[in-house]
Length: 487
Ligand SMILES: Cc1cc2nc3c(=O)[nH]c(=O)nc-3n(C[C@H](O)[C@H](O)[C@H](O)COP(=O)(O)OP(=O)(O)OC[C@H]3O[C@@H](n4cnc5c(N)ncnc54)[C@H](O)[C@@H]3O)c2cc1C
Picture 1: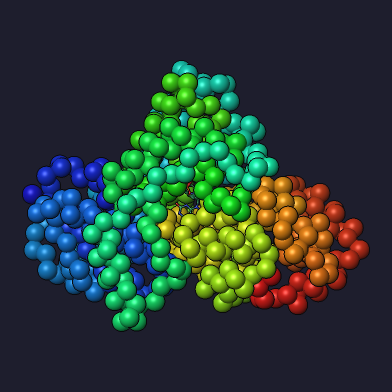
Picture 2: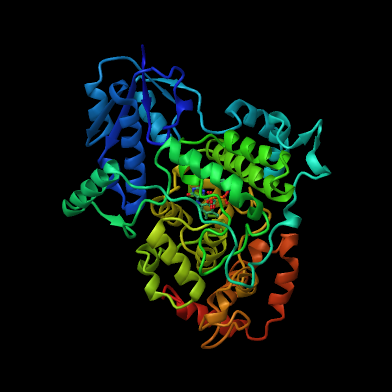
């Protein structure tokens, strides 16, 4: 029988056609030598691969080598592989003469995406999502969306509860075992040998096996999904998880299938256990956003990741690149950076509106920021960076996939979080000692790009406001002086 080469993000049962098929897994050390990944991300990926090999027993051949090529040279049997998730890995599969099958682990297949996208003047996630709901019959009543509306975000997006915490049980955390102990010892040794990591080591927080992933999904649907919608966009200093699923890592490792998760959510809704707004919001993230981002990685082509239409040329400062949260006084940025340092994970809004927003305002190189996200997050992969970081967060494609840049001042952060209360900066102040770096940075950003953004009707009002700011020159000068210093 042909041996199935499984990459480290193809670990679930759906990557095998026959449960008895022989398997090849390759652990390449060179991957970790080339770039400094978050220590907890390295741990998670190696733990997941080694757990899968242990589950498969004699069925799996597990090779630990410096490079993939070295390992492939040792295998004599014919190999096949599911379509990998990066261009570099696809080149490797092709060059090695491995039979390549279609991709798995995403809901929509590439031919369906291309059929949907071709001939459209504008690609909109919302249209793709409606199409996917129809094709999969998810949350549908005949040909119509359940409840009569496709998107219930208007019922979601509430600010955080005033109590400072959300009344939902925390996600069950995995219990580390001998495999984790071996991974930790190996990574300690690699560090002594000169392999560099970023971030702090800590107990494994994310599923590394199919059983752990299914347990997290079930717990989320039963206990947390109901609160997901209303508090999806909220941020709380004392609660990094809120009601998010924390499923991106197991989904991206291939331990869970997005349709399986979406159908589990729908079942809970049909059983009357979860409100429609939360269910719809979660299903949209899974079969809408996640799949859309995946397909755009391939569809937008090889040059898209280098897009830099706002000519952002500043390099990432050391305090940011090195996750030095203690160097930062702005409470939101310090807390979020500490979350990345300590867990390799923060939820969507801190990624977009705290980290990405800060980089966008300061004109940091989009590609460098994408590389940073890729290395520092437990769920970071190349395919997920392109549209999320280069496109959505940094607007480096000048609006090919979003209608306006995700730039916002302190007022947004004040409304959606509890950070501003104890902060030395004031979200309502743009000039002087207490000027919020996000508020000042927002106006400086609009000023720098006013010509490029002039035609965007969604920015007409802020641009008019910009023209009326009497202290604009002083604000711009202040931001210029702030430069790369930690705020
Ligand atoms: C700047 C930036 C960087 C990001 N980097 C990553 C990343 O490295 N890896 C990653 O998987 N996601 C990334 N995202 C998307 C999103 O922030 C994460 O998927 C989500 O925060 C993961 O937490 P969760 O599992 O609790 O998600 P939930 O909020 O519970 O959402 C459910 C699921 O929907 C999917 N999803 C939702 N939005 C997106 C999206 N925009 N792109 C892809 N999947 C999505 C994820 O699989 C997620 O698990 C990024 C977004 C931004 C703006």
